[in-house]
Image (cartoon, rainbow, N blue to C red; front, side, top):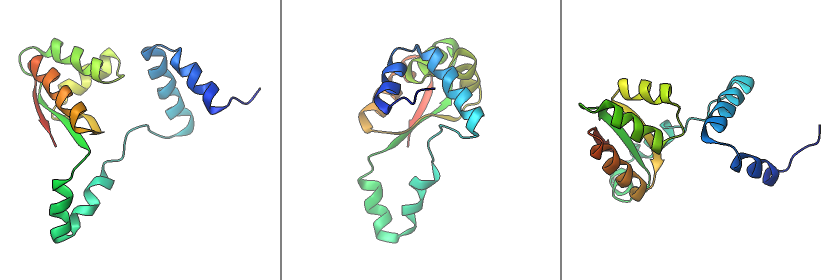
Length: 129
């Protein structure tokens, strides 16, 4: 089997649908025993220092969008979760039903605000941390 370069792999991924890419990631995780989830514990470590921790919070550049409750229009919320993530229907439904749950982790302020606005427009209760 010929070895593919990083650029060739990226081109192959660009041609895949989100469903195909999601299935690939699942199979990759199972094959190699890894997970594609972003580590959350690393963001909490710097808060141990007294004044430095306050400065860290003031210049925060990564945010987590947390779904607190789905509200009355759960189907619309599931659609928005699918639009914001690469999750399939079942995964998005499970995530919405297990609220409170992080939808996006480590995103910039603009992306967090847009996600919050979209989810709240669908009827969800959302917090940005």
